[in-house]
Length: 369
Image (cartoon, rainbow, N blue to C red; front, side):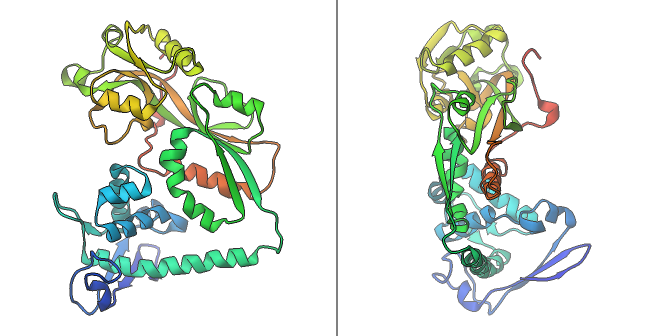
Protein backbone atom coordinates (compact mmCIF):
# COMPACT_ATOMS: atom_id res chain seq x y z
CA UNK A 1 0.00 0.00 0.00
CA UNK A 2 1.39 3.44 -0.90
CA UNK A 3 1.48 5.57 2.25
CA UNK A 4 3.51 8.61 1.39
CA UNK A 5 5.04 10.20 -1.70
CA UNK A 6 7.62 12.95 -1.55
CA UNK A 7 9.85 14.54 -4.17
CA UNK A 8 12.82 12.49 -2.98
CA UNK A 9 11.42 9.03 -2.33
CA UNK A 10 8.40 6.77 -2.33
CA UNK A 11 7.60 4.92 0.88
CA UNK A 12 5.71 1.67 0.37
CA UNK A 13 4.50 -0.09 3.51
CA UNK A 14 3.43 -3.71 3.29
CA UNK A 15 1.91 -5.86 6.04
CA UNK A 16 1.51 -9.63 6.03
CA UNK A 17 -1.15 -11.40 8.10
CA UNK A 18 0.22 -14.33 10.10
CA UNK A 19 -1.71 -16.85 7.99
CA UNK A 20 0.31 -15.88 4.94
CA UNK A 21 3.50 -17.02 6.63
CA UNK A 22 2.32 -20.59 7.17
CA UNK A 23 3.23 -23.15 4.46
CA UNK A 24 0.20 -24.03 2.36
CA UNK A 25 -1.53 -20.68 2.93
CA UNK A 26 -1.69 -18.14 0.10
CA UNK A 27 1.67 -19.33 -1.19
CA UNK A 28 3.47 -22.56 -0.39
CA UNK A 29 6.77 -20.66 -0.44
CA UNK A 30 5.93 -18.47 2.54
CA UNK A 31 7.70 -19.50 5.73
CA UNK A 32 7.98 -18.11 9.23
CA UNK A 33 5.83 -17.51 12.28
CA UNK A 34 5.92 -13.75 12.87
CA UNK A 35 2.58 -12.12 13.54
CA UNK A 36 3.18 -9.51 10.87
CA UNK A 37 5.84 -7.92 8.76
CA UNK A 38 6.20 -4.27 7.93
CA UNK A 39 8.74 -3.11 5.39
CA UNK A 40 9.51 0.33 3.94
CA UNK A 41 11.03 0.57 0.49
CA UNK A 42 12.89 3.78 -0.27
CA UNK A 43 12.69 4.23 -4.02
CA UNK A 44 14.63 6.89 -5.86
CA UNK A 45 12.94 8.92 -8.61
CA UNK A 46 15.20 7.13 -11.09
CA UNK A 47 13.90 3.76 -9.96
CA UNK A 48 10.35 5.01 -10.27
CA UNK A 49 11.01 6.31 -13.77
CA UNK A 50 12.27 2.88 -14.82
CA UNK A 51 9.15 1.25 -13.46
CA UNK A 52 5.88 0.43 -15.11
CA UNK A 53 2.48 2.03 -14.84
CA UNK A 54 2.27 5.74 -14.09
CA UNK A 55 5.56 5.83 -12.22
CA UNK A 56 4.96 2.68 -10.17
CA UNK A 57 8.11 0.57 -9.69
CA UNK A 58 6.72 -2.51 -11.45
CA UNK A 59 4.83 -3.69 -14.50
CA UNK A 60 1.81 -5.99 -14.60
CA UNK A 61 3.94 -8.62 -16.32
CA UNK A 62 6.54 -8.52 -13.53
CA UNK A 63 3.84 -8.94 -10.89
CA UNK A 64 2.31 -11.86 -12.76
CA UNK A 65 5.67 -13.62 -13.03
CA UNK A 66 6.53 -13.00 -9.37
CA UNK A 67 3.21 -14.44 -8.17
CA UNK A 68 3.52 -17.46 -10.45
CA UNK A 69 7.03 -18.16 -9.13
CA UNK A 70 5.65 -18.07 -5.60
CA UNK A 71 2.95 -20.58 -6.52
CA UNK A 72 5.05 -22.99 -8.59
CA UNK A 73 8.42 -22.61 -6.80
CA UNK A 74 10.19 -23.29 -10.09
CA UNK A 75 11.62 -21.05 -12.79
CA UNK A 76 11.30 -23.90 -15.30
CA UNK A 77 7.63 -24.56 -14.56
CA UNK A 78 6.87 -20.84 -14.60
CA UNK A 79 8.51 -20.44 -18.00
CA UNK A 80 6.54 -23.42 -19.36
CA UNK A 81 3.29 -22.04 -17.93
CA UNK A 82 3.87 -18.62 -19.54
CA UNK A 83 5.33 -19.95 -22.77
CA UNK A 84 8.53 -17.92 -22.43
CA UNK A 85 12.16 -18.79 -21.70
CA UNK A 86 13.57 -19.30 -18.20
CA UNK A 87 15.97 -16.44 -18.93
CA UNK A 88 13.02 -14.12 -19.57
CA UNK A 89 11.38 -15.17 -16.28
CA UNK A 90 14.64 -14.56 -14.40
CA UNK A 91 15.23 -11.19 -16.08
CA UNK A 92 11.71 -9.99 -15.24
CA UNK A 93 12.18 -10.94 -11.58
CA UNK A 94 15.58 -9.24 -11.43
CA UNK A 95 14.10 -6.08 -12.98
CA UNK A 96 11.29 -6.07 -10.41
CA UNK A 97 13.74 -6.46 -7.52
CA UNK A 98 15.97 -3.73 -8.93
CA UNK A 99 13.05 -1.33 -9.31
CA UNK A 100 11.80 -2.03 -5.79
CA UNK A 101 15.29 -1.94 -4.29
CA UNK A 102 14.79 -5.21 -2.37
CA UNK A 103 15.31 -8.91 -2.91
CA UNK A 104 12.03 -10.79 -3.13
CA UNK A 105 13.18 -14.38 -3.66
CA UNK A 106 16.27 -16.25 -2.51
CA UNK A 107 17.74 -18.31 -5.34
CA UNK A 108 20.24 -21.04 -4.55
CA UNK A 109 21.53 -23.69 -6.94
CA UNK A 110 19.66 -26.97 -6.54
CA UNK A 111 16.98 -25.50 -4.25
CA UNK A 112 13.52 -24.11 -4.85
CA UNK A 113 13.21 -20.31 -4.73
CA UNK A 114 12.17 -19.05 -1.28
CA UNK A 115 10.45 -15.81 -0.33
CA UNK A 116 12.45 -13.33 1.69
CA UNK A 117 10.70 -11.37 4.44
CA UNK A 118 10.36 -8.46 2.02
CA UNK A 119 9.05 -10.82 -0.65
CA UNK A 120 6.40 -12.22 1.69
CA UNK A 121 5.26 -8.71 2.54
CA UNK A 122 5.10 -7.75 -1.12
CA UNK A 123 3.15 -10.91 -2.00
CA UNK A 124 0.58 -10.17 0.70
CA UNK A 125 -0.30 -6.77 -0.75
CA UNK A 126 -0.21 -8.13 -4.29
CA UNK A 127 -3.47 -9.97 -3.73
CA UNK A 128 -5.14 -6.69 -2.76
CA UNK A 129 -3.66 -5.08 -5.86
CA UNK A 130 -5.17 -7.70 -8.20
CA UNK A 131 -8.58 -7.37 -6.57
CA UNK A 132 -8.45 -3.60 -7.01
CA UNK A 133 -7.39 -4.00 -10.65
CA UNK A 134 -10.28 -6.37 -11.33
CA UNK A 135 -12.70 -3.90 -9.74
CA UNK A 136 -11.39 -1.13 -11.99
CA UNK A 137 -11.72 -3.35 -15.06
CA UNK A 138 -15.32 -4.11 -14.06
CA UNK A 139 -16.07 -0.38 -14.04
CA UNK A 140 -14.87 -0.16 -17.63
CA UNK A 141 -17.16 -2.96 -18.74
CA UNK A 142 -20.13 -1.55 -16.83
CA UNK A 143 -19.55 1.87 -18.36
CA UNK A 144 -19.70 0.55 -21.92
CA UNK A 145 -22.87 1.64 -23.75
CA UNK A 146 -25.49 -1.08 -24.02
CA UNK A 147 -25.25 -2.78 -27.38
CA UNK A 148 -21.90 -1.18 -28.21
CA UNK A 149 -20.38 -2.78 -31.29
CA UNK A 150 -17.45 -5.11 -30.76
CA UNK A 151 -14.14 -4.04 -32.22
CA UNK A 152 -12.70 -6.55 -34.70
CA UNK A 153 -9.09 -5.96 -35.66
CA UNK A 154 -7.21 -7.87 -38.33
CA UNK A 155 -3.53 -8.11 -37.42
CA UNK A 156 -0.49 -9.18 -39.41
CA UNK A 157 2.13 -10.36 -36.90
CA UNK A 158 5.32 -12.36 -37.42
CA UNK A 159 5.03 -15.96 -36.29
CA UNK A 160 7.79 -15.82 -33.66
CA UNK A 161 6.75 -12.40 -32.39
CA UNK A 162 3.27 -13.82 -31.83
CA UNK A 163 4.40 -17.09 -30.26
CA UNK A 164 7.20 -15.86 -27.99
CA UNK A 165 6.15 -12.36 -26.98
CA UNK A 166 2.48 -11.56 -27.69
CA UNK A 167 0.45 -14.72 -27.10
CA UNK A 168 1.85 -15.30 -23.56
CA UNK A 169 0.46 -11.87 -22.57
CA UNK A 170 -2.74 -11.94 -24.61
CA UNK A 171 -5.01 -13.24 -21.84
CA UNK A 172 -4.47 -10.14 -19.71
CA UNK A 173 -5.28 -7.82 -22.63
CA UNK A 174 -8.50 -9.67 -23.45
CA UNK A 175 -9.59 -9.56 -19.81
CA UNK A 176 -9.21 -5.78 -19.81
CA UNK A 177 -10.74 -5.29 -23.27
CA UNK A 178 -13.46 -7.94 -23.70
CA UNK A 179 -15.10 -5.96 -26.52
CA UNK A 180 -11.98 -6.25 -28.69
CA UNK A 181 -11.41 -9.24 -30.95
CA UNK A 182 -7.92 -9.68 -32.39
CA UNK A 183 -7.62 -11.87 -35.49
CA UNK A 184 -3.97 -12.77 -36.10
CA UNK A 185 -2.38 -13.74 -39.40
CA UNK A 186 1.31 -14.66 -39.67
CA UNK A 187 3.32 -14.63 -42.91
CA UNK A 188 4.61 -17.98 -44.10
CA UNK A 189 8.18 -18.54 -45.28
CA UNK A 190 6.90 -17.87 -48.82
CA UNK A 191 5.27 -14.53 -48.02
CA UNK A 192 6.66 -11.04 -47.51
CA UNK A 193 4.79 -8.86 -44.97
CA UNK A 194 4.92 -5.72 -47.14
CA UNK A 195 3.41 -7.66 -50.07
CA UNK A 196 0.64 -9.04 -47.86
CA UNK A 197 -0.18 -5.51 -46.71
CA UNK A 198 -0.44 -4.43 -50.34
CA UNK A 199 -2.80 -7.32 -51.21
CA UNK A 200 -5.10 -7.35 -48.18
CA UNK A 201 -6.48 -4.86 -45.68
CA UNK A 202 -5.05 -5.15 -42.16
CA UNK A 203 -5.66 -2.85 -39.21
CA UNK A 204 -2.29 -3.31 -37.50
CA UNK A 205 0.93 -5.17 -38.17
CA UNK A 206 4.16 -6.07 -36.37
CA UNK A 207 6.97 -7.86 -38.19
CA UNK A 208 10.67 -8.00 -39.05
CA UNK A 209 12.08 -6.68 -42.31
CA UNK A 210 15.48 -5.51 -43.64
CA UNK A 211 16.33 -2.06 -42.32
CA UNK A 212 17.42 -0.94 -45.79
CA UNK A 213 13.98 -1.48 -47.29
CA UNK A 214 12.01 1.76 -47.86
CA UNK A 215 9.20 2.21 -45.34
CA UNK A 216 5.82 1.53 -46.90
CA UNK A 217 2.62 3.49 -46.38
CA UNK A 218 1.60 3.33 -42.71
CA UNK A 219 4.81 1.55 -41.62
CA UNK A 220 7.26 2.93 -39.06
CA UNK A 221 10.43 1.57 -37.53
CA UNK A 222 10.28 0.72 -33.82
CA UNK A 223 13.77 -0.69 -33.29
CA UNK A 224 16.83 -2.11 -35.02
CA UNK A 225 17.73 -5.78 -34.63
CA UNK A 226 21.06 -7.53 -35.08
CA UNK A 227 21.24 -9.86 -38.07
CA UNK A 228 24.10 -12.13 -39.03
CA UNK A 229 25.47 -15.58 -39.61
CA UNK A 230 25.00 -17.57 -36.40
CA UNK A 231 26.41 -20.92 -35.37
CA UNK A 232 28.15 -22.77 -32.58
CA UNK A 233 30.61 -20.57 -30.71
CA UNK A 234 33.33 -23.17 -31.27
CA UNK A 235 33.68 -21.71 -34.78
CA UNK A 236 34.83 -18.35 -33.41
CA UNK A 237 38.45 -17.33 -33.68
CA UNK A 238 40.95 -16.62 -30.92
CA UNK A 239 39.45 -14.40 -28.24
CA UNK A 240 35.98 -15.06 -29.71
CA UNK A 241 36.85 -12.96 -32.75
CA UNK A 242 34.27 -12.89 -35.56
CA UNK A 243 35.06 -14.82 -38.71
CA UNK A 244 36.27 -13.50 -42.05
CA UNK A 245 34.26 -13.76 -45.27
CA UNK A 246 36.42 -16.67 -46.39
CA UNK A 247 36.06 -18.55 -43.10
CA UNK A 248 32.27 -18.17 -43.09
CA UNK A 249 31.98 -19.41 -46.67
CA UNK A 250 33.73 -22.67 -45.74
CA UNK A 251 31.12 -23.61 -43.11
CA UNK A 252 28.06 -25.82 -43.83
CA UNK A 253 24.99 -23.60 -44.25
CA UNK A 254 21.37 -24.28 -43.34
CA UNK A 255 19.14 -22.33 -45.74
CA UNK A 256 15.39 -21.65 -46.05
CA UNK A 257 13.39 -23.83 -48.47
CA UNK A 258 14.63 -23.55 -52.05
CA UNK A 259 12.93 -21.02 -54.27
CA UNK A 260 11.17 -19.12 -51.48
CA UNK A 261 11.37 -15.32 -51.24
CA UNK A 262 13.17 -15.74 -47.92
CA UNK A 263 15.89 -17.89 -49.48
CA UNK A 264 16.39 -15.27 -52.20
CA UNK A 265 16.63 -12.56 -49.55
CA UNK A 266 19.21 -14.49 -47.50
CA UNK A 267 21.38 -15.35 -50.51
CA UNK A 268 21.30 -11.72 -51.66
CA UNK A 269 22.42 -10.54 -48.21
CA UNK A 270 25.29 -13.01 -48.19
CA UNK A 271 26.32 -12.06 -51.73
CA UNK A 272 26.44 -8.36 -50.84
CA UNK A 273 28.98 -9.28 -48.18
CA UNK A 274 30.99 -11.47 -50.53
CA UNK A 275 29.84 -14.73 -48.93
CA UNK A 276 28.97 -17.69 -51.16
CA UNK A 277 28.23 -20.85 -49.16
CA UNK A 278 30.13 -23.81 -50.58
CA UNK A 279 28.18 -26.46 -48.69
CA UNK A 280 24.42 -26.54 -48.11
CA UNK A 281 23.89 -28.96 -45.23
CA UNK A 282 20.11 -28.72 -45.18
CA UNK A 283 17.02 -26.54 -45.38
CA UNK A 284 14.35 -25.58 -42.86
CA UNK A 285 11.54 -23.07 -42.61
CA UNK A 286 11.53 -23.19 -38.80
CA UNK A 287 13.79 -20.81 -36.93
CA UNK A 288 13.70 -22.84 -33.70
CA UNK A 289 14.95 -25.87 -35.65
CA UNK A 290 17.72 -23.73 -37.12
CA UNK A 291 18.69 -22.49 -33.66
CA UNK A 292 18.88 -26.06 -32.34
CA UNK A 293 21.10 -27.14 -35.22
CA UNK A 294 23.37 -24.14 -34.66
CA UNK A 295 23.62 -25.09 -31.00
CA UNK A 296 24.72 -28.64 -31.86
CA UNK A 297 27.28 -27.35 -34.40
CA UNK A 298 25.48 -29.15 -37.24
CA UNK A 299 25.26 -26.04 -39.42
CA UNK A 300 25.42 -22.26 -39.53
CA UNK A 301 22.90 -19.87 -41.03
CA UNK A 302 21.47 -16.38 -41.23
CA UNK A 303 19.01 -15.37 -38.54
CA UNK A 304 18.04 -12.52 -36.20
CA UNK A 305 19.32 -12.19 -32.65
CA UNK A 306 15.86 -12.18 -30.96
CA UNK A 307 14.93 -15.44 -32.71
CA UNK A 308 17.85 -17.43 -31.30
CA UNK A 309 16.41 -19.57 -28.51
CA UNK A 310 17.71 -18.65 -25.06
CA UNK A 311 18.19 -22.30 -24.12
CA UNK A 312 20.66 -22.71 -26.97
CA UNK A 313 23.57 -21.25 -25.04
CA UNK A 314 26.25 -22.36 -27.50
CA UNK A 315 24.89 -20.24 -30.35
CA UNK A 316 26.92 -17.12 -31.15
CA UNK A 317 27.20 -14.47 -33.84
CA UNK A 318 29.90 -15.52 -36.30
CA UNK A 319 29.60 -12.76 -38.92
CA UNK A 320 27.63 -9.50 -38.73
CA UNK A 321 25.29 -8.59 -41.60
CA UNK A 322 23.22 -5.45 -42.12
CA UNK A 323 20.51 -4.72 -39.55
CA UNK A 324 16.87 -5.63 -39.72
CA UNK A 325 14.10 -3.59 -38.15
CA UNK A 326 11.08 -4.28 -35.99
CA UNK A 327 8.40 -2.61 -38.09
CA UNK A 328 4.92 -1.52 -37.02
CA UNK A 329 2.01 -0.95 -39.40
CA UNK A 330 -1.13 1.08 -38.78
CA UNK A 331 -3.76 1.27 -41.49
CA UNK A 332 -3.95 4.99 -42.33
CA UNK A 333 -7.50 4.57 -43.67
CA UNK A 334 -8.93 3.35 -40.36
CA UNK A 335 -9.57 5.75 -37.49
CA UNK A 336 -11.36 3.94 -34.63
CA UNK A 337 -9.65 5.40 -31.51
CA UNK A 338 -9.98 2.06 -29.71
CA UNK A 339 -7.26 0.68 -31.97
CA UNK A 340 -4.72 2.56 -29.86
CA UNK A 341 -5.18 0.13 -26.95
CA UNK A 342 -4.34 -2.83 -29.19
CA UNK A 343 -1.44 -0.92 -30.72
CA UNK A 344 0.06 -0.12 -27.31
CA UNK A 345 -0.35 -3.75 -26.26
CA UNK A 346 1.43 -5.15 -29.32
CA UNK A 347 4.37 -2.77 -29.04
CA UNK A 348 4.87 -3.10 -25.28
CA UNK A 349 4.51 -6.91 -25.39
CA UNK A 350 7.64 -7.04 -27.55
CA UNK A 351 9.77 -4.01 -26.73
CA UNK A 352 9.30 -4.27 -22.95
CA UNK A 353 10.20 -7.96 -22.94
CA UNK A 354 13.81 -8.37 -21.72
CA UNK A 355 14.06 -11.45 -23.95
CA UNK A 356 13.80 -9.23 -27.06
CA UNK A 357 17.20 -7.56 -27.59
CA UNK A 358 17.40 -4.39 -29.70
CA UNK A 359 20.35 -2.32 -30.90
CA UNK A 360 21.39 1.06 -29.58
CA UNK A 361 21.75 3.83 -32.22
CA UNK A 362 25.56 3.63 -32.15
CA UNK A 363 25.37 -0.12 -32.90
CA UNK A 364 23.48 0.20 -36.20
CA UNK A 365 24.94 -1.29 -39.37
CA UNK A 366 23.54 -0.63 -42.85
CA UNK A 367 24.15 -2.44 -46.12
CA UNK A 368 27.63 -1.62 -47.36
CA UNK A 369 29.05 -0.67 -43.93
